[in-house]
Length: 84
Image: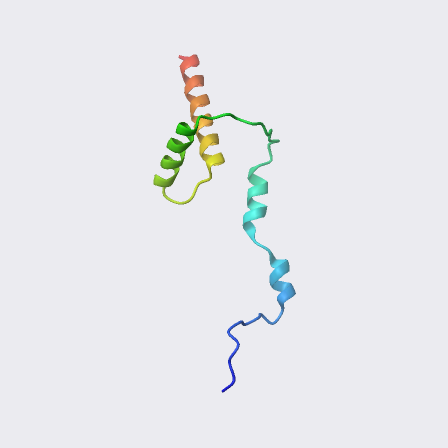
């Protein structure tokens, strides 16, 4: 008995490839501000705490995103405290 091929290719593979996705275009629109890259030394115990908190959140979040959110929260608190 001949084996059936499980792999099915779309009729126009080039159209599928060129269609692309919206996620990369959407993320580029969101990040129009110029970014700066730098090294940050963090104690391993703090990294472990951050990772534990990240894992408890719904969905998947990168360590970088979590740290950026934490920095933004801190900046907002400091700005509120200075305006009072």
